[in-house]
Length: 422
Ligand code: AMP
Image: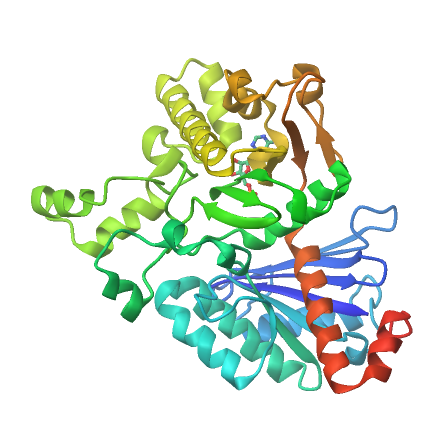
């Protein structure tokens, strides 16, 4: 079964065509700068194999519809050879949706009602959900006969109990406006939790984990018996550790102070906290690789930004140890978590009291799909696991489609399970 996974942003569409029978990436690509004079298409066929083929073009891409047509054109009539014979060989389209609010506790088939509910959550994530909806709308137009599945970044965290997801605000804000912690990076969390369980050779339902998703956006999640019980990102992806350009935790009175003292309006404050803060706000750089280079040249502000980044993550590890009681593994994932041994070493230094001892030699290696970096005497396993959100979205889509087929026709369910639809 071939599934096209789409992550539609405000001016870009990331896509992967996955052969889910073999869990293999057939094509991965990016349509970007939609709406600008020079758009961009990067398409990689058979990525990571000796048959990899790369196409890069800069056509004008006026809107998402043209962007998606370009993708389909590339898949069927690409200069580097067709990947599928025709559109019917794409059996489903799976969409990454950032904010499911409280409306969704699992991935679902896209229906009019589902679109309405995603639209109702636009207020919680205006940029993300609007762009995701645009992706759904265009895909429904261009793939009219194909099932569309919505997979939500928030779903994994729907198991967080009220005492952890509520903010201590007047309760009616939750009742009327659904103001609460939702958490994000759920797809990544579910993927690495599953991988971790496989590595530890025990059911995920028995795993207590602390996941450190450290990329441009960062989050820390406490997973108890395979379920999220707390996470650092909140009603929006701004709360928690220091991020590339996002501030993470601040005193909420900050808004009033900035307004009174500097005359900043709420839009200016929101932009500053999301785009001009975090590592960038402190030292002017938001990419951890650039920060290392600056530190090596003796840049004190880069060092300060690095120290703040590490310290805040360490604090969250301590908090979530207290939340979980027993921790089987700490997992590092995403751009920084997977690649930056110095961040990992600094984050874990001094945590022997929590049963965490790092193997520094192992930590300096480069992981394939995963690697273990704790010393043998460490009570807690420490794993670096490369996340794969697209594959997780594909897996969840297959699950939704199988359940739907079971409901509609046991015959088709059996066919699907036997791999006859490929
Ligand atoms: P992500 O959001 O998961 O794509 O992660 C992006 C971030 O990961 C970048 O902004 C970099 O800060 C960081 N990153 C990627 N590769 C490396 C690397 N080799 N070493 C350190 N940081 C890296």
